[in-house]
Image (cartoon, rainbow, N blue to C red; front, side, top):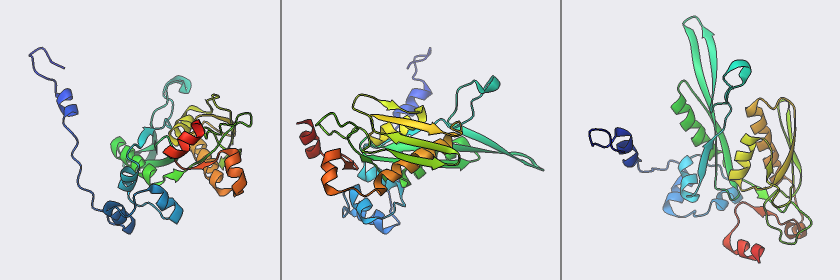
Length: 257
């Protein structure tokens, strides 16, 4: 953009300048193996039951990871009728005055079987946002998906294989399989998480104080974790079209055929 004097604006110049990133120096054994190329697939980490302690590991092994911020803040306006914000602001009364703290919730995922949600708190908005994005990468988990309809033989994992219920506080959320093309019939912030996880069709039912967004999000994560806890017979894996994690190229061609 050019201003009246014929010069480029400072905003365009700042956007054109690439962000400088320091070279990654891993401090954990897992991080060193990833940088040396010993571990090239993130499934190796989940199969071994290892814990990710460095956020850069997710960026290296999942190069196409996306991130988003969830609207967990209070709805400003008369009677709370305004739009929700990404920052939830709280205050603590002290003798020196009010101490303000901001809380942010971020979600990361590759839209193909991996998703992570994290929260960050700070006295300022930017550090809280950065902490949430980093914690979301550390909380990355592998999602089990499956075919949500018994009326088709395609067995494409666009939904979940069976119904699960998650809870947090007074909130109860039940996720149910849905046929292909149904869409995400669920609350908007929960739909963001499921979309980044690679789930395209789902039905849901909620109970409790769902206006408390953090409890609703934690209940959803509890339900997604229960998907992987249930043991499944080997003969039912193909029957339900179950996929653990991302869909590989060979599996895509077989499913489309």
